Length: 416
Image (cartoon, rainbow, N blue to C red; front, top):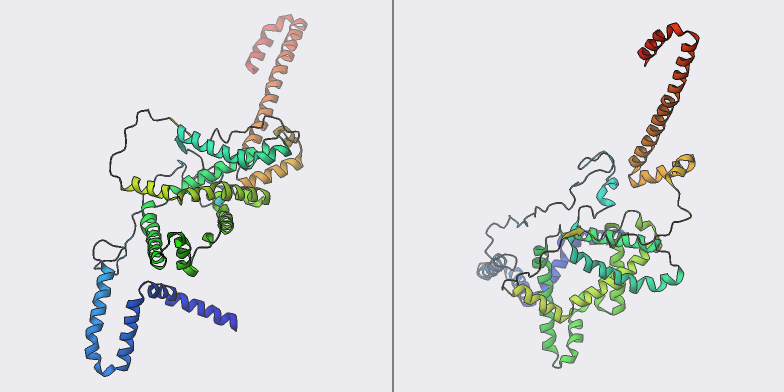
């Protein structure tokens, strides 16, 4: 009975939006107190309701004026039932195939599984950036590998196969990230989320300054001012890193290849690399006051940018050089396609693997080409070895019947 009551209480709380009411009372305590007093007076002094209607009309006018000229709109919103809808940006797809199927090649195929889409396995298709930007990004990722992977990996082995797979995974992550950034409405995020968070932070700092006189205790006073609303990542450095690890794990189904999440060791390594070497330093850089002031100056400054003195760098495939395999040593366990075709058990397992990857049609094409090559080779051999026998037969016929050589030659020509 207790869980059922708790569930009903949560549903009732969501429908009544008690969290919104509590937030309004916290932000406007004086107005909420006056509204509560006016409601109590209306219930107790109901015979003087005609007099209290004057105060209710005043409150209704103040609320209407505030809502119509609120921070969400620059002009009064007369039509309250009409909600503002952000303009959908008609962004061009990063991939010319759109949602092409890896089996039939049709756009937005509904027949085959969505997991067979080419973009799910190669999100960098037709994604090109400037060569200078690509070189800088490759340098950053190389530094991440040098500082986080190679110090312990070189003590284990000098084989680059694992690092090559890690490079491909990082390229996949960066490609998916860029693809999703192109679909995000950045002005909407700035106006609806970042500005509200910034104004909330400024309000907390102002209240904290009123409580303390010494600036040394301002940070602690601001943290106390947040109270229970303090984000878990702001409690300590350890909590911040733990929060980034959990956040990275939640992003894995969206930023990693479909089969990479099944490998526990790979996901742990990528989680530590992204949370400790990418996300944490990036957040420290963005939270630096110098960085914030510099970004504000860039956004506020209306002076035109300086003209470029150098020509634009050419476009190159995204992180293609970074993802090139470094391992040049042939593996002993590597099997050639000819060896797989000759053994039925290996061919069956290889075909099942390609079905999961959505590339079984490639194997079918290769097998068809092999069968066609065998048949064409046998036909050529039969034609090649059949001509000398015919010539010998003609010669023997000429020797046996010299008078009939012209008739024999004419018959042979007719057959050919």
